[in-house]
Amino acid sequence: MSNHFDHLIAHHYLLAKPETTVGQPFGEGVDVYKVKGKMFATLSLGKMGKGEGEQQDWWMNLKCDPDEAVMLRDIFPSVIPGYHMNKAQWNTVILDGSIPKGEIERMIDNSFMLVVSKMTKKDQQSILVNL
Image 1 (cartoon, rainbow, N blue to C red):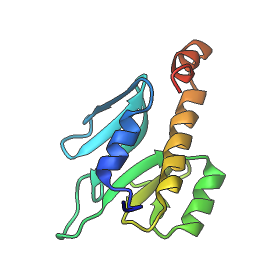
Image 2 (cartoon, rainbow, N blue to C red):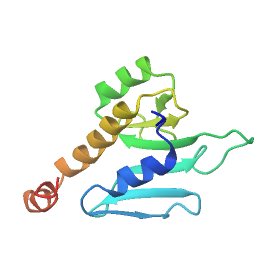
Image 3 (spheres, rainbow, N blue to C red):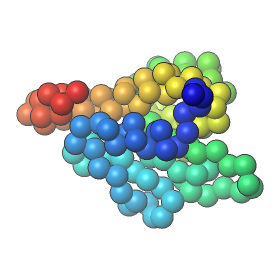
Image 4 (cartoon, rainbow, N blue to C red):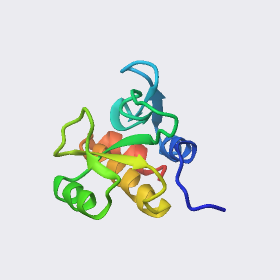
């Protein structure tokens, strides 16, 4: 089995998070993942669904601690400042196979928990009990 983290694995991993929904509020081609109505990830083919060429990679936007965001960009060429997002708090992860699966899962987990941590205690508890 390959260690490549593709968009289908990403989609299923994101949707497996408690109380997560997916929609396309920005238009067709950009899946937006929310926990209790708060966005924690987007997934699209190329730049927010816009891109050229046959060999396009999937792009995933994830919320990130600002200091860690910069470190991840330094370590991984496929992690860039959040495309169409607040660049201090969001990274774009290009799913080109260069980042280990476990590292992408960790980035998704962190994005999810950052968003949950800003919720009311009651909302946090209803989510955390399912983790």
